[in-house]
Length: 132
Image 1 (tube, one colour):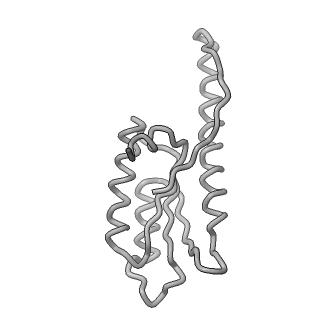
Image 2 (cartoon, rainbow, N blue to C red):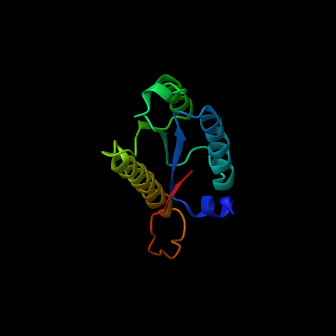
């Protein structure tokens, strides 16, 4: 079931809790699975550390998150859904920016390639974001 969502997603928020080291470790599995399902070396993703308001319970450091994001060459953001929310909207906006940048880059590449190949029919495309 999860792979169906991965096939359809145009971008992904990889969210873990800073209070749960196991959720941080599980993110690597999702990252690898997304790349495998998409059959790509990279894909629009954003690594998101959640629950940063719980300073006294924090077990995954900001440095750990930033290092993992740098290793994967994806952006990193810290969030909290507690009232008032911190960077929740910004995370969604950022993943949409990443998707659009990817789509724009793909379009330029396709236009360049079209000079040498027959044009395939184009269809309207909706962007989809999946959260893990």
